[in-house]
Length: 186
Ligand SMILES: NC(=O)c1ccc[n+]([C@@H]2O[C@H](COP(=O)([O-])OP(=O)(O)OC[C@H]3O[C@@H](n4cnc5c(N)ncnc54)[C@H](OP(=O)(O)O)[C@@H]3O)[C@@H](O)[C@H]2O)c1
Image: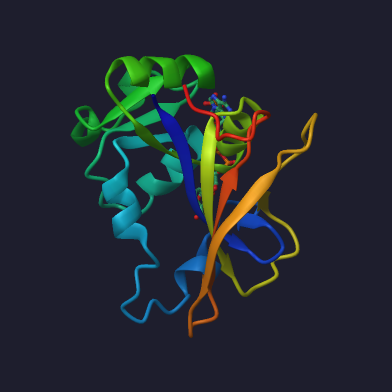
């Protein structure tokens, strides 16, 4: 059994980055020593699956922030494009979301952190996300890269919990409700 989990910060109007990928609005938020559950969430997953867009943004941070294995989804990058110091930490895949999750299940992964707007959208469409934790940032950006996109059918969610912080950040977790009332998992 492997399941997909989202943990992402989003502006109040639904954007995860400015149109050019800039995260200045997020980086300037005061953390006040609070990690908003990030360390516990990271400890709960076996690794990450992220899109090329997110991977390329993380590379601009300088130091690689992940201790766990990362699968980067791309149909354009090749393994030779992976930075030398990351070859043991990052794997590329051009497989479909279902194939990736099937492969990770066979490797013994149980919980996958799915990251990147378009990648989250495609995993949601394929019923591969079990829950989503959104940290809403009190800012309106007006435009940018959307967390969510168009859907053929509604995706029902069950609200599990919400916590608001003195900083103004609001942290909510939703379970994705499958057709049979249960979260989807492979
Ligand atoms: N606010 C936050 O917490 C947060 C978190 C994560 C990311 N971000 C930001 O979000 C931005 C990136 O998001 P994004 O939506 O532009 O890109 P993304 O989802 O990270 O990556 C999309 C790319 O992944 C590749 N891909 C391969 N298989 C795919 C599939 N099945 N579905 C979708 N994509 C697939 C494609 O690259 P190829 O063209 O190479 O095939 C596609 O262009 C960055 O600016 C990042 O900083 C913000």
